[in-house]
Image (cartoon, rainbow, N blue to C red; front, side, top):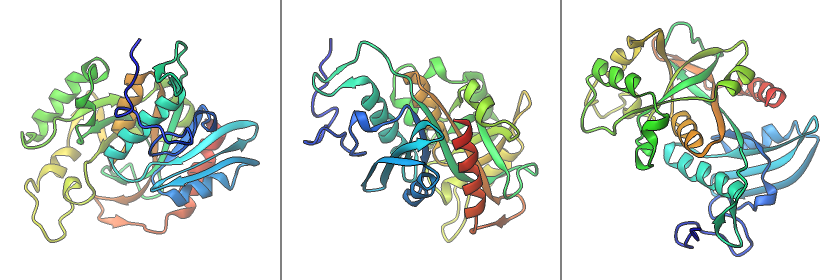
Length: 288
C-alpha cells in the first residue's frame, strides 16, 4: 500500500493538517462550508455547544452541536483553487491514517454543503432568492488535473455549452458536474434548482467591465441564452463546481446553495444581504 510522502501531504507537528490546521478527531461528518470566515461565527452562534474553534489564514473552523447533530462550520475563502485545498484536506482528515500516511481500509463519506452568495442570470432568480446548484459548470479547470474527470462529468452538456458560446481555446476547458441528488432534494426543498457557473475570478471572468475592456464582451449574453434539454444557467459564483467535482471523484456528498445578491440582467445588487444569508444558514442547519 502506498505511503504518502511528506511533500504530498503536509501534517503539522501538532498532528493537524497543513492549511486547515485541524486534527482528524476535530472534524464532524457533516460540514457547512462558506467563503467568509466571519460567517463561521454566525453559523456557530446557533450551536448549543462548541468543541473547537480554530483559524489559520482564511480557513476558520468551528465544530459543535446543533439539535444533537455534530457539525463543522468551515470557511474556504474565495476561489476554486481554495476549494482544491479544502476538499482534499477534508478527505485526508477522514480517510488517511496520519500515523502510517496510508489510506484507511474503511472509507468515511463526508456530507458537505456550501452556503454562498451569487449573481443571478435569469429573471426567475431575483435578489433574495435561494438557488441550488443542481449542476455546476467549472471555468476554473481544477477538475481537469485529476484522473477520472470524464467518468463523473456531463460530457454532452460540456460539448453543447462550448459550441453555443464559441468557447475560446485560451480559456481552461469547462467541466460540468451534477451535485449529489439526495442532498439536493433534502437541502433544496422549495428552492430554485439550476445550473451554476463557477468562474475563475470575480471581475473579467464573470463579464464585469470596470476599466480593462473584456476579450469576449458577448460571453454573458451567450451564457444567458444557453439551454440544454431544459437546463439553463441561473447564476455565477466561484466554488460550486470544484466542490461538486472533487467530492464526487472522492465519493463524498456535496452541493452548493446560494442567496442571490445581484441580478446581472437587471443590473441590480444588494450589498446588505446579512439577513438573507442568516436565514439560509438556519435552513441548512435544520436539513443537513
